[in-house]
Length: 424
Image (cartoon, rainbow, N blue to C red; front, side):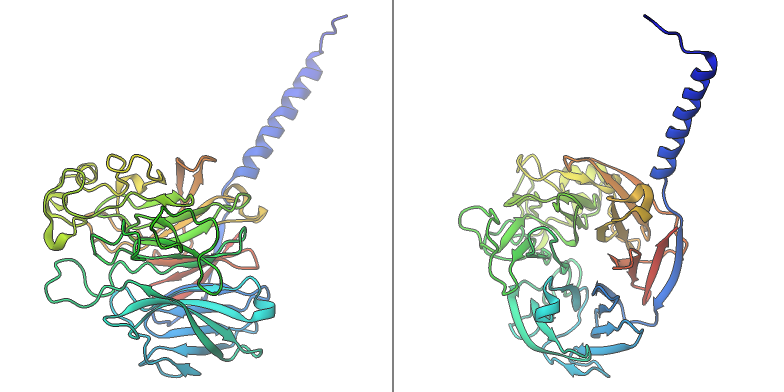
């Protein structure tokens, strides 16, 4: 027997459906944001890391490592060779160009071992190197000791009177993060304006490393035969962000592009990111100083697409199995520095999505970035849609983005501040 639904019932069903759609739309809406300054008058703050009680460790590129304790007291823990007011200094740590004290991570077992990890330029190895240092924080949180350089051979770009591109310390990488999935430490490194480095099986520049707390290769890195076993992915230009998608814990890099194409890429073990700035690759001829990343042919191109055809960020013609980026900033290079995945219902429609920060300064022939974007990355990791954040704060050069234990987003900017963005 067929029963006909009355017009009243039909209207009620339509109203319920409309309410359901409306609720879904509201649930997926972007949050509003409130803004407050946590610390100011800092010297190029570069990274932050939190303990569950809100204690925040942070680095300043040309000064050193400090901690803002849960009660708001700031203690300077480890300074560089010319730093003042620190509980301790290390004479080999220095700041030059893009290099200095940068990435920072807290050991997942901090409660029992008190370990933190810092990426810094060092003069211990001539002409300089980047190192990942493991430090032990005392119980009072007022000092560090037991420095162990668990990685001591990451390339650094030295000063050179005849190098045509950039200054010392350029393309320095420097982000360090523990994966919440496998518990290993991931380290991003830059190509140091050296054409041979990104595809090199032994040089650690232009790579993402995956190591244990002693600096040894993590199992399952999957690097090709003959590669340093610490290498997880290679063929990178200058990744300065790495983050892990909630649910799958797949790592994604945020990477600076060459006159075009900042990229966000899903990483796979042993993957090649497809950056190869060597001369005579992919039909290119000779390049100044054997580095084609800023070659005049590319610089003279009219638009980013033409530049990308000459010097692709991900060279799928030469490396057809390279990891394909999820997003390339509409073909622009605007200084993408850091990223993290937002997590929690307070982020509404941004929950589970990646937020990335830009800090372009008008170089590379493209517009200034200085913004935050939210990326909705497809499940397969090879496409994404972008939403630009309506900032409640002045535009700034964003250096680091970290979600704190309170669920809020903390941002470090080159203007010398660490601020809090609270969703509402």
